[in-house]
Length: 86
Image (cartoon, rainbow, N blue to C red; front, side):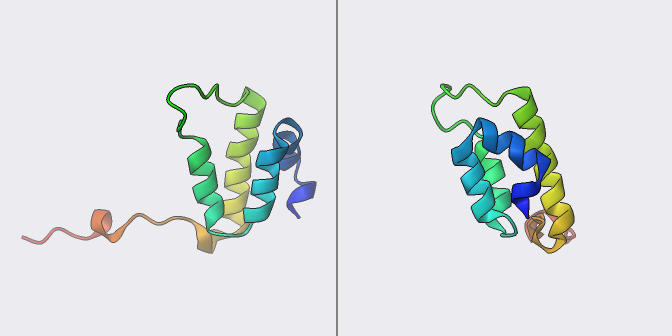
């Protein structure tokens, strides 16, 4: 369970609202989307960013999610991996 994960605990302690979202989407394809959205500034440069320990915990949690749910790893679109036709 994600609640017992040390990286989740670091994030949840600092940002409970983010912890709730991570808990909700753990094991779902949307988990990766959520993490990607957290790395994008959608507030016109006013977002301060995460403290180092939280940023590290998010990265580690992302890796743990990929290891636990390998079938949910985002794959590149076919457009980028399709062989070129001559």
